[in-house]
Image (cartoon, rainbow, N blue to C red; front, top):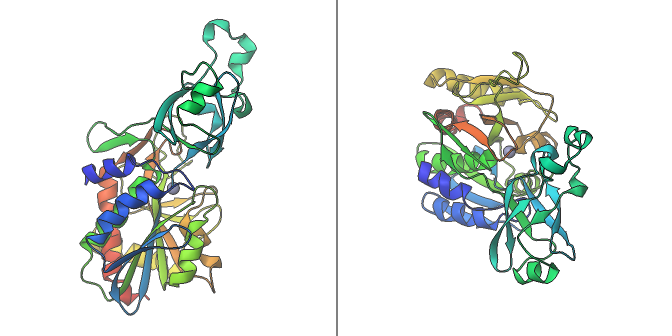
Length: 343
Ligand SMILES: [Zn+2]
């Protein structure tokens, strides 16, 4: 499972440029699904089984990134963010720019401490003042490296094992959900109805891809698989975020845009109880994911989210406990097996 996760993490794919990860997922899902197709906007839809109920699981394939906006006369690259970045953490990072000649390594420059004023050091650098240095002497050299306006850029946080069952990488949000989709499609064999497993596009820029696929499939219920917040680090107060790493999958009861549907809540809770899989509850007033827009698609699709808690979400060093991932796969697989009792 870890090998597959590494392959998913190493497939660069920011919002709007999901092809690399979609290719990896398509190859895997073909082994276990009755059919796999890509819809007009780029969502990957794998299907297994027939008849009712129709259950849809989704995970967004896109990750946060940056995009080339301008190349100046000295060869430095100005950029925009794609998705919900905290701009304070961008300077002094390595990046990869995906131009026409393959990935190019660069660094987001940051003024050396030796020459910055006291006042400067107290204030975060503004995005409009940031730039990427790929080592070019002038604009021509940057262009010769294959870089042009509109190329996408990813961060450099590579996969590493941490202590015990924990890992860190850039893009765990949402390679973890993508891994879960594949593992669930693989493991679920005894269910009544039709299972749709959907890798969605452009979630990080406004939950875009999932709407069309949900409208097309018109499922009886949908669950999104994603990463969410873990609140067990020294910089958080008890009560800020109730979920902890290693304490199991998280049912999000409320986020900034939605509530879990009551029937879906019952389905998740009863399945966790029956299978003795630990389940955490989370109430947030921020963030949203694919399932958050389900209530406004067609006449409203019953939905909820089963998430894996993540530390340092939306940074290049997200930390995940793989035991939570395994428990999420078990929980959602069992939910699919018993879906006909609920929908
Ligand atoms: Zn996500």
